[in-house]
Image (tube, rainbow over all chains, first blue to last red; front, side, top):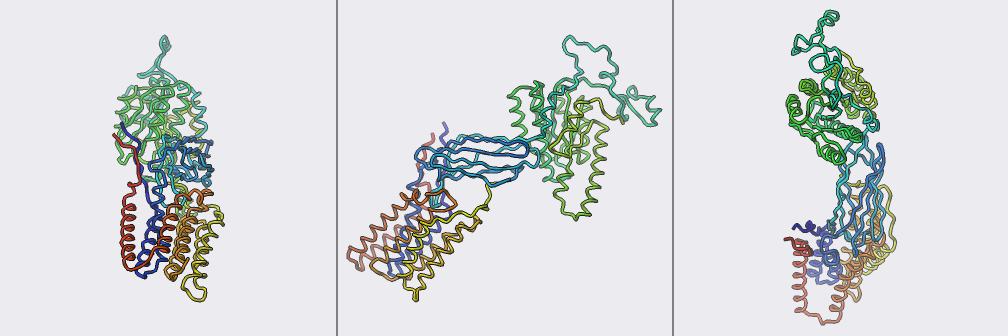
Length: 429
Length: 174
């Protein structure tokens, strides 16, 4: 059986200072044969020892109740620390660790009494985020500030989630299902994989039967038919966690935004009893299998909270192969990818070839990059214009493979919600 | 990332403990061997600087507030000649300094009262030491014994500081 964690008594910087001055006074007294410095040094030498003896002799137990309140960008982290009998709560010090994705809005407020200490940390979330707030460290510190000892509590960390509010309504949109339900039969099925869906640019690996020769003759470029794949009413949320040329800082921020949006999307679909699966693709694909219910929501939240950017960029094909092992084909797949490089663009074609109909939701790095720029205003405008052109080109290339939504206002996903409501609106070629 | 180091509001001055510190330091300065009231000036300067540092909005700077106060009292005590009540006053100044430490305006009110049991221990030791010095006959031999005891005290304090776990009373883990 494991006992309580060991929390030793710690000297604070003031204690050695007092002892050093006390020792110096003591030596001065002996050398000068003058007892006056000795009498001054005596309290200084004894105070740290007296504090150690008079304070709690083991880690004091405290009860901590935590809550996260607020909405949208506002995050209020509140807590009540109740001390054990015999321990004055006014001698408790609370150290709160703020998650990196949140910013301080105002100074933390404390309200103390002899039995409990209440605190409220006021933060803001500049972007959608999912962040774990660890349990604050509670220290008993003697009134003189000479020693301290960490208290023991049984509180659990909390998770702060803030995502675009539109996601709360998206679950009401039922995903278009093409897989027949029991007893249901499709009156007509055209093509190899289902009903005719649209025309797109032909790919080198398209079989001749899939080329739409009449459309090719009319357009003067090779076009191919596209068919509905078998689709279930389930959803796969796939996060691209590979590093990109944007750099670690921007990658981390975009990934934090993406994790929050993924949780919002999952929440929304889980609310309407849809089955949701999760995949995080860094060097390998980490998955949460398809399921529904409240427990599954916690599973997804835990997986997203712990998800982190990979240090190595794995080939996109690995993701598609791994996804095919864990999920059935035809699963509607929302891929979160910043499309910052060719590797990111490659993800959706590989997934489509493995039978996953893909929608790409791409958080744009431009707002973050603009905020971090150190260029002059004129140069900044030019750089922003070029960056927009590059971005537009990347999104257009991604559209050739799958519907792609450029997400540049992080607190709004209206464009994505509109697309999900009208999934037939798509471009060909 | 912890709570911010910078304090937004200037903490209030706690007059009671500050007055005690000032009065004891000023009295010690008056009795010290400095000429022309220099001891008094040292006391005023030390206490004033300590008070200003303590109410500083910069938390890092406020942490250095005890340095001038203690330095001022120590300088006065080192220069003070032996007298009937000078030793007792020096000890009292040390206790007042501890009470002032406990009455930090950045922390909840009443620190000095809560620290009273802790301050009582050095106060008791001080009383015993002073009465021993006053009433016991002095000579070369007792001085040597006192020196030895002091050296032992220093060694004991150094040991305690080096091993804070001596104060711990954790439950045994199986």
